[in-house]
Image 1 (cartoon, rainbow, N blue to C red):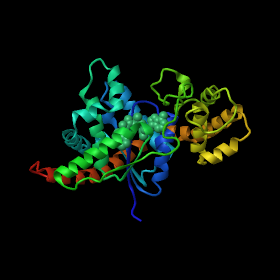
Image 2 (image 1 turned 45 degrees about the vertical axis):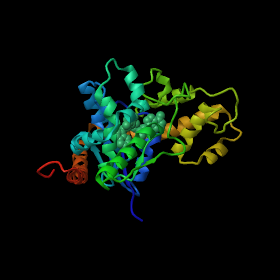
Image 3 (image 1 turned 90 degrees about the horizontal axis):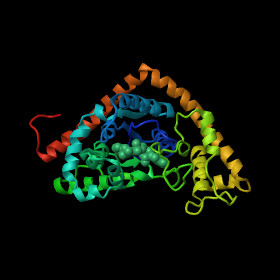
Image 4 (image 1 turned 30 degrees about the vertical axis):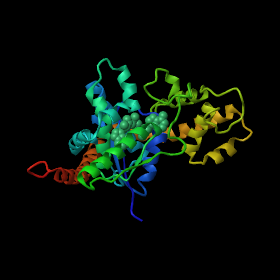
Length: 331
Ligand code: TYM
């Protein structure tokens, strides 16, 4: 069977949360064993909103160390920074010219983020077109993401299809890979909103770098409901369902197995066990993270990844340039 081509990206916008791990990173680690994988630090996406330079420098390193510490193996997958492969921006422009204002205006992430901005940066608006370029540049067949990226992925498919219709078959049409459980890990304090590091309530999210005692405390303080039955029901029991989802995702148990495991037990036991599995996962991660963050090995690995990515990306870009009829020399 031919391998799937996997591409996904994460923004270097601070310490990642347990949501990023369950919705994305955990899948990446599994996929690298079977498929041809490209994982990207999307630093050009991160500057669509103004950033502090020192902070971005640090966040980029933090994210590289996170990828490595969760178990991304640069021998198996290509790990690189978007800004190290200039083809992303070139194809990004081409995908902007393929996009319509109306479809970009409908993006819910754009609507949400532009609400907070005094003046709306144009890059925030064209962000999804660059994301489409990230994907089609590697002829990705599948894109593993959390639920919040679904709309961007639909747009990426539309743009790739539109380009193919206009200019002839050029891009592979990518399929989103969104897991049935765990694609939307919710806040621990307000289980109807997504777990997010931008939340002002610290107890609402678990950062992958939280001190382990704090992790335990946050999970033990997570809201539940007034019943005492442990079952998955995202509509009527969002808090308990979220804890069950975290448990089943990390232990790699099906939801039915997780429910069975907790049958007859109380919410106290649920929280204790969820805290245990999260702490057991984070402990070795944090040790490896410290190593990579400090290490020069990280810089070498990122350079190596960039070289591998550039080769693939430039090949697609050349094909696109030929298709469009631009340029006098090759990339
Ligand atoms: P970003 O950096 O916001 O998030 C990275 C990944 O984590 C997932 N995620 C979650 N999954 C489950 N529960 C949560 N609470 C949760 N929060 C975040 C996201 O869905 C995502 O998969 N636009 C993208 C980055 C990007 C990209 C790409 C992704 C740029 N180019 C090309 C795929 C392919 C973003 O901002 O993700």
